[in-house]
Length: 483
Image (cartoon, rainbow, N blue to C red; front, side, top):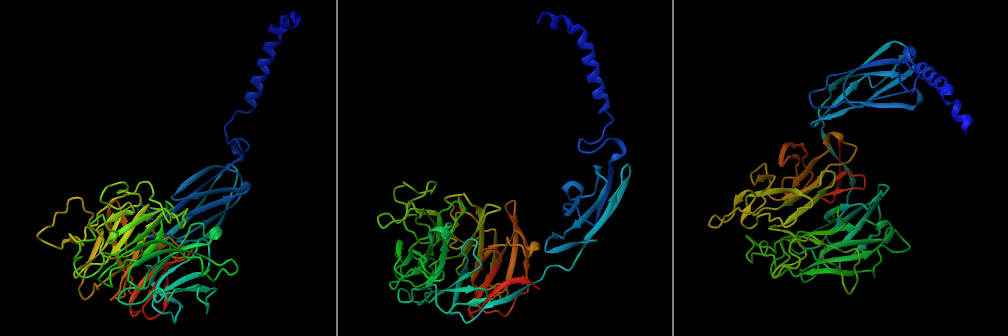
């Protein structure tokens, strides 16, 4: 040990010199992935024609699995020499499209030099929509849905049947037929269907219908063990029955699982003009409300539980099932999960139709009925708007406006990228198709898509790929497509 230490002063300079030589040999710049100096090249990519605030979509790929997305002009350095491919995609601008030229191109990058390439964007014809018929001969098709990840379409007929469209064919045998349990008097019938998020493993689905007494019934059922296109007729479990006396209209009717995994139900105010009993503003009744239920452990003994966060849970004189109130007849609501927004289309009395938009997790909202109709006082003698949610958008009952809103969905499919983020809706009487965008608390870009002559629009539907459908009183179902 002492001999080794005694040699340290002699060995240390030699070691230091060797390290310096190694360091010097690695100097000279360049990328850590490529040889130094002139061994790499550069590429200047010009992306032209994009309006301010619109990003391009140009992908550069090359040697060594190199890949980079460019959204604006850029000069890329330290590139390995070789052949590179530029692939440009169209981008949306409002309801139109900006298309690239060229779509694909090859460019050679040489060591010590800067190559160049350019992509120019230009507007194409604005998006135009059309309706493509996918099914006909249905009896009052009032809802359409698909199980998660499933290519089939399940279409609800108001007289009590659920039909299956598989590979473009309408199956003769209904998935479910409860025609003996309901009637179509007034606005009654089988009104909607919701598949449990884990339907693929548990087979549970939920239906919303009116019984022969006119009361609202929310029921859980299960698919049969031996046939995925037929429900088990003996699997019914009643989740909730809501008394709906006196009138045969304003049932609401939509069931939907929210992004929080709970079951939501939109109920009407009980019917007639002006909500005579005052149900919508009464938090001790379940009519005129948006309900939120935990049905993930339903049993005969406890069909549902009150989820944490429900605003009236534990409040004396109020029902814990209520999530929001002040609704007249919510004819479809929709969760836009990417934006975390809830859209509610509420049918008006005699003058105004409305769409309300609020954050998904916001509990206890009062949407104003029967104090307000749309953004207008319904009863001018008592019109305090304090604490009320006013509509994001409304339209009147004039010749062009219609009579009764039919709410749809925010488009999140892939076939129509120009439509992404827009909420689509219609009117029962006029049958048009319109959309608007919503951001920063404001609705904008209301667009009429020129759809006509398709009959009374009963509802919208959404498949597992988030493409949208319109359901007509003529018994036909249409997919919304590019014209």
